[in-house]
Amino acid sequence: MYSLNVALPSSVTSLAGRLARDLPRARPRPRGEHTLVVKRLGGGDHAAYARLEARAREAVRGTAPFEVRVTGVDWFETAVTGPSPVVYLAVESPALRALHERLCEAFDAVDGMEGDGYVPHVTIARGGDPAAARRLVERDIEPVEWAAEELVFFDADRGQPASRVSLPA
Image 1: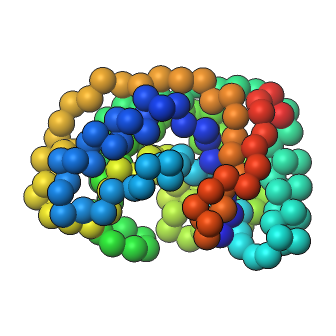
Image 2 (image 1 turned 60 degrees about the vertical axis):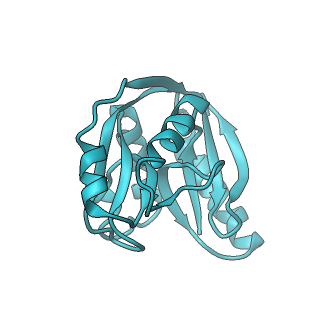
Image 3 (image 1 turned 30 degrees about the vertical axis):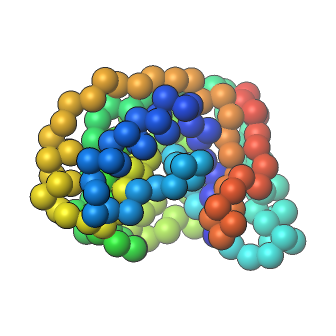
C-alpha cells in the first residue's frame, strides 16, 4: 500500500516515542515509521506505483506549504483495522484537510478511514491496556507546530519512503 504523507519534524516523532513508553503492553510505532497520512493511494508493483505517484503529483500541483499543529493525545478505542486501541497524536490543520479532500477527488476514499471519516493523526501505539490508553489520553501536552513543506510518498509494505515532493508543488 502506498500513501502520501506529511513529512514530520523530529519534535513530533520524539514526542510520540516518549509517550509510547507509558503504554508498556502496547505495540509502539517503530522509530522512523511515524507517519501523518494525507491520503492512501493504493497498492501494486513498481509500474502501478509510478502511475499512482504521477496522479498524486498532478492532484497536489499548486499546493503551498501549510501549517500543521499537534494539539493533544487521543485514541480510537476500536480501530478500523489492526489491534485496538490506537493511541495517537491529534493533528489540526484546515489546509491538510483541504488537501485530503482534493486527493479524495482523484483517488477513491477508503471507507471508514477517509473522506468524512478522515482523522489526521500520528500513531503512538496500538493494542495494550485500554486503561493505560485512557490515562495517556487525559494527559496534557505542549502543542507542536510546524510548516509542512514536504510530502512523502510512503511504501507501507517496505516501511520506507518511495519519493518526496517539496511544497509549493
